[in-house]
Length: 121
Image (cartoon, rainbow, N blue to C red):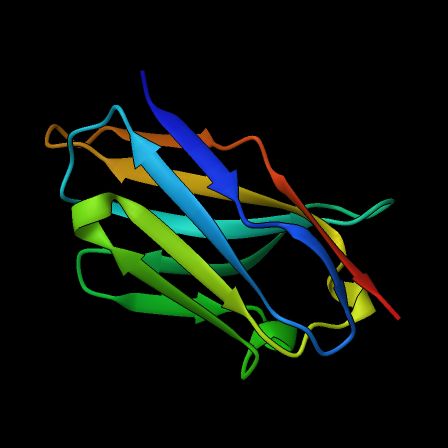
């Protein structure tokens, strides 16, 4: 069974930093992408950042550019999201998503449980 464990959320003041971690297990593929999504109260879930672990291609939502950095440790099957200069508008539940492309062309998406980030002003 594919499992994703998100961790690293917490409470910080404006300007603080957090590092989120997403550890994956239960899948066998060399072709996958991991993304971080967030959902604030009353808002739709949105992508924050993602990385294609096979080639390192990354994407950042506009408000995250210059503040957040996504990276992967393939040996540990873990993706990190380093968040600096946090703002109150970053407050949300952050979810880890695994997008897997199988050898036979299959595509599957899996979600972690989410970790809460709260930025006080």
